[in-house]
Image (cartoon, rainbow, N blue to C red; front, side):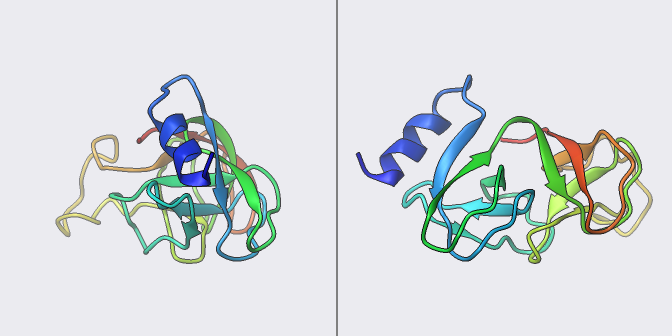
Length: 138
């Protein structure tokens, strides 16, 4: 079975939280990547992308190897900035999760609980730390 078929079958099963994907580069544990659901290949996400399909590496994955990526539930993720508990997080091009600015969509202060986000922090964390997050989209 091709990696794309495995990815597609896993995504359609809401009880599975981890999918395999082929790394586009060396990916450290906790980094967030975008997964092409047609090919099963990873790529670095665009900054603040909320429309892609993302996963968090469960362990270090070498370029070209198949790795396990968390797509739902609790995960250990690499933070790209200081984030308080409950901060909405989005993938960035450095493959870390950054706290979302409350002015991100309109330029005006908003309720952070209604902004689109990939995950939310469950622990206070700073730039470069692996912290527990809850994946809330997908």
